[in-house]
Length: 346
Image 1 (cartoon, rainbow, N blue to C red):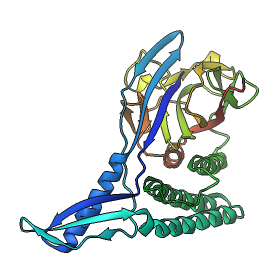
Image 2 (cartoon, rainbow, N blue to C red; image 1 turned 180 degrees about the vertical axis):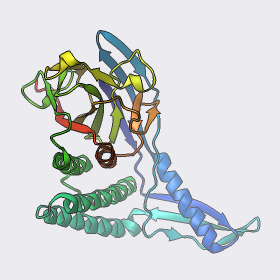
Image 3 (cartoon, rainbow, N blue to C red; image 1 turned 60 degrees about the vertical axis):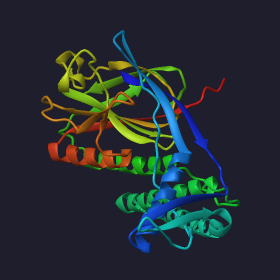
């Protein structure tokens, strides 16, 4: 079974009291806008997240090892209460210097983060009284506010603003809550006419320690075909889904689809063995099956960095919703197995 991702993750933050940017324009307004853009660009150059990954596919005695090179990730950042210099003419254009200073902008960042902190906590409290779709919408709004909070926090830490608020819940925990609710809704539209699917491993617990090996088994009530989607919500904030390569020697759709023969009905079938590896977090194995062969599969893009056939939506939550729509439309059978990767206790 295709599942071994090893990440070496490092983050470098260069702290400063202030960050400046220079802008030029035919008008003062354009020059200010360019100066703010230069600040954002400079912040991006100060924050680099790099990692290298190795993926090993282990199935039927075959092993393929792939390594990827380091990359840098640069994002966009909120600029609150910057200071602007007086405009000066240079080569026929206005020149303005914008500065983000911790003493001048500190309160703005702290206050904005406190507001978001209160809003997130309020959403989490009120969502406990809600059910299903309403609860999902509330938690999704909390994720959006969480993303805003994190960007503010990153800039605040870069310019060394003290006494900034923090959150006691992680983005991964929020996304896992939404995913659990979404998956529970799958059960409401499963009919008796559909194929019954059971999933288990050779472990008693659903918490798998790093570097341990786990065998995955499936059982089907009818002849047909199936494929696997793995939904991963990592503790480092990454959220993505990918098709599992069940047949490494095949090409195209056959790389992912496996047949259920008559003599395999109502018997446990060994899908493969996986070695549990970093990053830590919540994983959801989704089995999709039907009586006839699959004419289409979820839309995917091959991720060279990870070496995975990722579903095109950018988060597990979005992919789960898409999969639910496809299953309803095509009357497919589906089942989930959730597990958590944890550190070795020894």
